[in-house]
Length: 175
Image 1 (cartoon, one colour):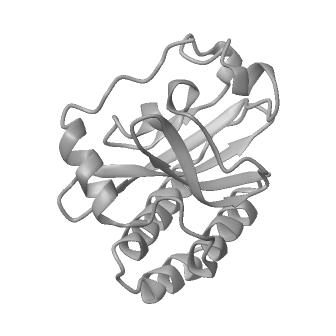
Image 2: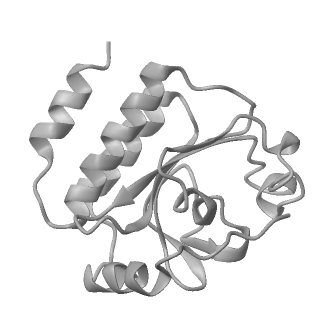
């Protein structure tokens, strides 16, 4: 298993995350609606709004997972925040970074993962909107586009910007 590296601007990224004043807050319907929609749209059992701090990934919203956080050292999202494009793992058992990860070997037995960054206005990624499944799969270009669109909606909501119009536009393109 390969632990995620730190972001090149980790201190700025962490300050951006802390300034949101959202870590360890109660669940909110505005985020839960988005993770539930993502799970349904992509037909996966798990969808998360994952925020990555120094030591953990904490789930602001979770659909299909009981855990509220996991260590950053085993997180897929810790890797995803380092990418400009969504990180897509078609089969975690075949990826040298993840094949022996506890989240692959044990519950929730991750095989498929796709996570799109949640960049704030200053460009710092504070986490991901991710979708997870127990079976290998690939995303179509259409699906990848929708994942990125939904991540933008989540990022705006994290910054206190009402993104309902963008969400409705993204949802209308579902077909």
